[in-house]
Image (cartoon, rainbow, N blue to C red; front, side):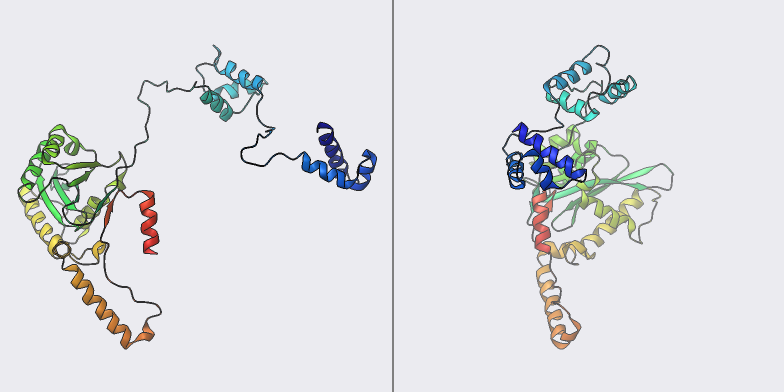
Length: 344
């Protein structure tokens, strides 16, 4: 086989230099067809499980040399980037930085050496699906500016992700788990909290010991965003934007009484008058009471009659009004793909 490979290389070299392939084969005493057969026989096995000869692969001696250099007294505290640079200055090249790292990792010689705790990849929060009201809630705290620069009030707001309704709110001069705990204890007089999934970020008011104990006693299932991942809590962030971008938002409050009075008016407007885009431009109260289906039916009948009167104005089927029966919290990649296919 080695002789066949050598003959193939000689012919390739001759053809590259300008010779004709047939004449080169005649000099070697073989036919062109024989050379073609040899090329097939010498070809590497292309099957996935086959053993392949990798020309760039380091030999065992070279791999051991990499390990000896990296573990030597001179280089043991240096990174592969520093080792390769120093060796290159001295006229020696063994392998690339990536190859150093790959060999050291394979031998279990890579470890975290800093005094700080190594960074870890946070798992995505668990996926939950809400098919009706009172199943999955999202809550957060937003700052309310006051007329005194640097002084803020804190609005605690809880939202049902299925109805988009604000189910609880309070305004305080500080934020801590004691206030959060008392707020949810008061909510149990109006809602059955056992089994409710409560999603939030990782602030102390959400994960403090008093709040955790309260959720345990009430039977609430906690769900938390990943650290420094803002879009893990999109429902509350969307609510805060609606609140602070509306024309009636004062921008700054003179005191806590004004803030609470304004928040009460906003919550009433949001729940009973605001037509929410995510639920087909009906109000959260209509969604909760089941009135939204009748509203969608009337709209669709109106659109259908309009198309029958003027079909030339529609180049495709009219858009039907409605909203999703299932609202997802932290959907997985598979669920996102399913939703995209459904919408398409």
